[in-house]
Image 1: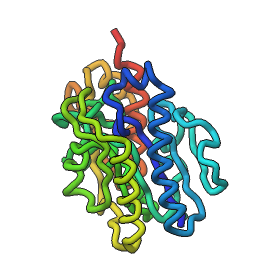
Image 2: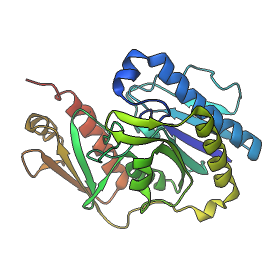
Image 3: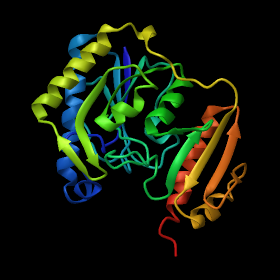
Length: 275
């Protein structure tokens, strides 16, 4: 079995704000490693593993120390920029995708550090009229390769947000009380929950997990944080400005839609503080 793990950090146990990630960077990274260790140890004990690829995807993807897990079957993607960012390295050879440390989409009440691919420049992302966050966006990308998302971890707000979208094992690491406030669970409880939910994944046939795909064209609409960001991203060929802060893009190929989201986030972020 080959498992692809995309990691973020907002949904990790013990963390309540981006301020902590800046002032306590090494501590936050240790919590990420701790959760990944729960996942990896349980996988290695429970099935025959060919590869576990960890795609370090928070900020610039430089959160994990090289060689952290002591097993030759662990591969590690780091650095930025990269072509497919949070899903870099995924292909059809993988059997399952885990999304670890994920968070609610922008504008979700009580969602810890809620955002959708960019906290500085994007307010809301819609695919065919439905508001989506990083979990949904990345699940559809995994579907391009026929790979299902089979486990997600994050706060209870993300768990509730995904109930209609995915029926899979979920690891609740904390309870959201506000954007920068959360009720934290003990490390012992989080460890046990990770072990239980990874085992629940292993006990299910892989073909029982839904591969998320779109049928037909996909319309992307993005509301930007300010009109100056819209001014900037509207120069991208194929991107239509349909309002002061809203741009639209339509394609038959979800791969193009996914990369348009990344383009908007990368270019728009340069103008988030533009005056």
